[in-house]
Length: 60
Image (cartoon, rainbow, N blue to C red; front, side):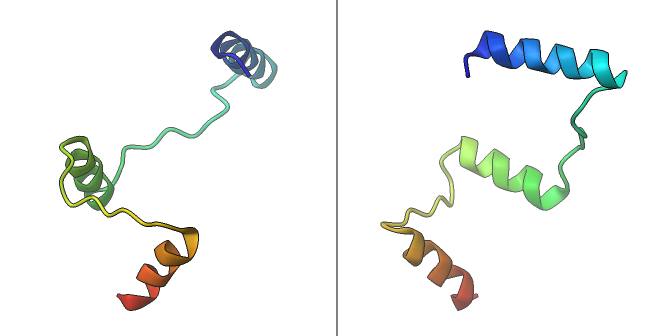
């Protein structure tokens, strides 16, 4: 899908629904802090595989 197609689809959904088709929310403090750190390349973890990623969740 091209950006132009995506925008047209968005506008079409707005016209059909009469409202914005996606819920927009302000991120909570944890999400906001995580996004800010990632923009600064701070505390970023890298994984070699999906299995390594999911294994890291179990360690906590």
